[in-house]
Image 1 (spheres, rainbow, N blue to C red):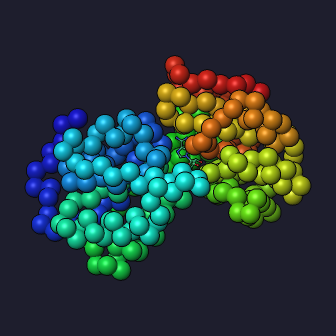
Image 2 (tube, rainbow, N blue to C red):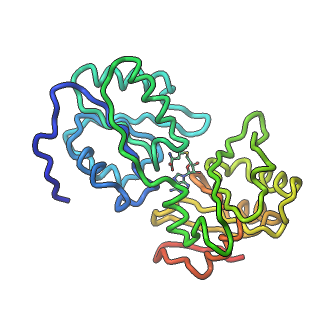
Image 3 (cartoon, rainbow, N blue to C red):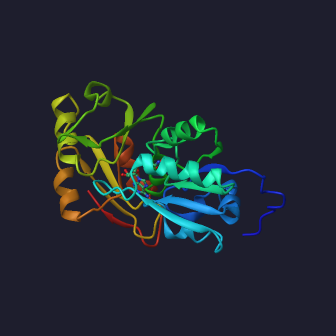
Length: 263
Ligand code: SAH
């Protein structure tokens, strides 16, 4: 891609907190691409796809900051310190995160550390998984016939239980999108039914949304844990719960590599 990047470099160091989207590099913003081409150093997470990294200037230093569950390559404080150090050396730093940095991305925490150290920063939003993954799965998150509200929650387990506000999750006419919920899925389905959801409520789990390896598994709260186990899905997976999931059959469009396990 050709971009007008003249006069980009300011004199002092700066950190650009950039959203990389859900994987398909075509979903990067123009601003993200320009910055990837111009940065001195890129500090990136494991959710950033190879297709996105292909836009990084060959002369840029690349630092992998990791963050897989239970396997943090750099601890959060180490990442914060690293960003401050690189910017203090006068470098243009792109801190690249999957999806949108402000949605379950700890972007706020990193910026607080930069602000406290007087480091200049900017934020470039990205397509968050809820939006990008649902689009590529053909599941509109709202629809006048099915859902007037949409909740984004994290299903990350604490002490073996998902610490979620169940009464708000089981309300009718809404869609619930769960980030990081694969491990806790059986418990989440069980708790939703226990708190009043129909066992027949449709649910989809999408692995590698927007990527050639995308897989969509659909089912109901009653049978989803088994379906997901059978399909052998692996992280990253996004869970979408609500009547809108039914539209997947009609609206799935992402070909050719999409493999759908039908209900
Ligand atoms: N900041 C990111 C979310 C980070 S939390 C964003 O805005 O999207 C990581 C979780 O996001 C994963 O566990 C998964 O639930 C979801 N996720 C991110 N990319 C995904 C993808 N391509 N396919 C499915 N889920 C994805």
